[in-house]
Amino acid sequence: SWIAATDAGAAIHDRSPVTAIAPAPGGGATLTVNGHAVKARHVVLATDAYTDRLWPAVAQSYVNVSSAQIATDPLPRALQEQLLPLRAGISETRKITYYCRIDPEGRFVIGGRGHSSEQLDPSTSEQLRRAAVARFPELADATWRHGWACRVGMTMDDLPRVHRLAPGVWTAYGYCGRGVAMGTALGRVLTDAIRGVPEGDLDFPVTPIERMPFYPARQFGATLAINWYRLRDALGVPA
Image (cartoon, rainbow, N blue to C red; front, top):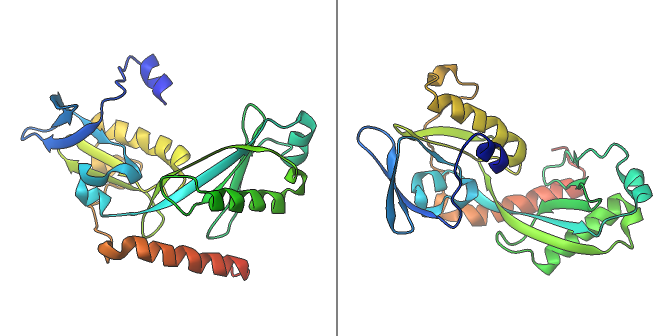
């Protein structure tokens, strides 16, 4: 996290978007930041579903889908213990899953696939609310105060990727909605790579970039796939 980074002596500059990366002949790259050139010996592209034009080959190797979450007001302690006695986050084993947890302030949070990749629309909020009540009827009268949505990068096989894009330029992405855990784990892999650990000795394979088949139709295909899996889940077909 940024707290761990600053504790280790890193300087973090917000409002400093990188709009271009030009690999340098001897390794590393020159970054265009707010119109200024910044040279770096090592670069980690940690943008996942938001890579876009920053490195087109990466952006063309996954498809964007929406992930959305909504949260209640803080719940009474007794209700929290009734819902999730061990306070553990849970996730379903369906193909199109719902997942939920109770945050440190006692809010019940549920998430799942959304309809828009950038904003939380009313239909998605209602879909998530109904899903929560169906699984936990005790939430029927809860006030749902908060909600948000974002993009998630999905790969063809639901597995993340690590690539060396150029000497001194690395990326990890394609967490398919599991970025908190997988991003943390692969962050350690990228750290080892930057420290000079040979690629064959890293704890995760380094692979070449593969363009997603039928890339121009990727979003249409993703919508069809999500609806197909929703139907399978509704019919009880095992994932």
